[in-house]
Image 1 (cartoon, helix red, strand yellow):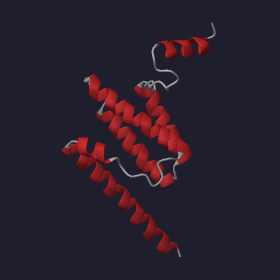
Image 2 (cartoon, rainbow, N blue to C red):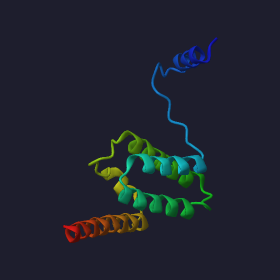
Image 3 (tube, rainbow, N blue to C red):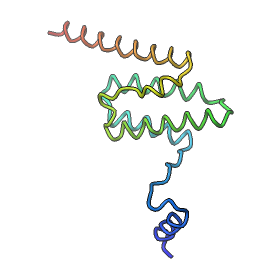
Image 4 (cartoon, helix red, strand yellow):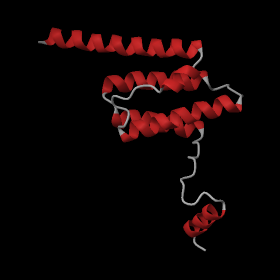
Length: 133
C-alpha cells in the first residue's frame, strides 16, 4: 500500500476520520534557522533586526532548560510564530487573552520591554525621517 493510503487508512481506523494530525515539532536548531529565515524574507529591515535579537536572546536563555513541558511549550509557540510570519497572518493581530492570563510576571515584564523597544524604534524612525526632509 502506498504511504498516503496507509496513513489515510490508519486515520480512519483510529476514529479520527480525516482530521489533521498535530504538527510535529521541529528540533531547536532547525526552528531557530527557520525563524531567522522567515524574518529575512518577510519582515522589514528594522523589524527584522529587533526580531532576530529577540529570537537569539530567547533561544540562548532556553538553551539549558531540562523540563520537557517547558521545552515543548517553548518550541510549540515559536513554531506557531514562524508559521504566522511565513503566512503574513500576523499583521494587526492581537495577543490571545488566554495566553496573557497564563503568563508569569517575568513573561509579562518581557512582553512590556519588547513593546517599549518596538515603540522606541518607531519613534527613532519617525525622528530620522523628519530630519531628512
